[in-house]
Length: 313
Image (cartoon, rainbow, N blue to C red; front, top):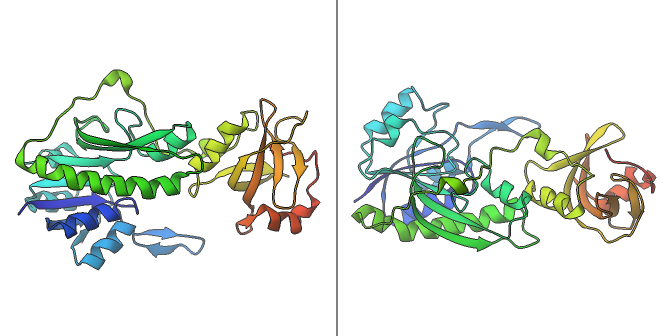
């Protein structure tokens, strides 16, 4: 029976772990990030993969940092035949990459060599891509640069956002890994070197990427909003306070206003001028210090003071 160490952290990874357990692989341990404080009350919360591992009765290892740690030696000492990672969140040291006889493989949520890095789903949507996918790859010391074993693509629908694509790509990754693992184990899998001339990167989202630039066209801003939904969420500034824009759509109101100005107010939304003469219709937002609310709720409350010509910065 093939001995596996699984490494993953977010909800994307949990179904993949569950599949390995259901398929009867001998999972020696599950390695995930430490529990973190979550929410305003900073409640210490385990990552989704830990919750799944505990439910399945699997041992869990949670290193703060792998390199040079006691946990690293513990993992190597388990003697796994293969290490499988899916959005683990740390770089694996060479010592660990070299340890399993079948190598270390990764379930990566992009069609490599596109979107190497920690935010491939966010970035594909922000960039307005129509397709993305999953790559099963061998891991190397260089970030997401290992040889490709298998890939599967999937459409990004216009209403998709990062949350919906996480769910879809998790399912694709689970099924693709299920189909690919037998070939890896018996040594008959493909091994395709990545074309370095086609490499693009998707680094973890920065605070600056979250801020809306109203001079950009409406479609670009809409892609930004859905690419950052439901986390970390796009934001703008109104009356010197940050406002999160949870959801929006491309508007249709003709205008001659400057980007950032309110050009139309409806019962359930308001439209803000963008570059190229377009508008963004805001549907779901969160003013500073308040809960998330629909635009209709906002307009009935504090937002009832919103007027045409008011400006978002």
